Amino acid sequence: MKIGVIQASSQIEKNSLLYRCTLDAVKQYDYEVINFGCFENESSSYSYVEIAVAISFLLTSGAVDFTVTGCSSGQGMMLACNSVPGVLCGLAVRAQDAFLFGRINDGNAISIPL
Image (cartoon, rainbow, N blue to C red; front, side, top):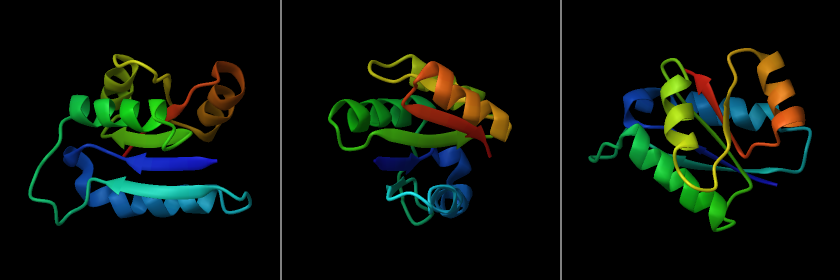
């Protein structure tokens, strides 16, 4: 499984933390984690909607099988992701949310509060 990590520019300083936590969460599996940013040294900034469109492209093209994203509350990115084709994004505030989302909803993206 390929997992993409990507978040909007509003939480740019937390990208490396999100990436490391995702790597740590899947270390027992043979999953590939790809960090798509946004990165602190980028001169451009990206909105939630722009990142949601990028997530849609990544998922529908088959570049990744799942994405991990987020914003301050997690709700904004979840709503933006669910407004574009090919993305079923859940909100995971607690570990139990992620567990249930993965087993019940069969989504392909998760948004967490950063």
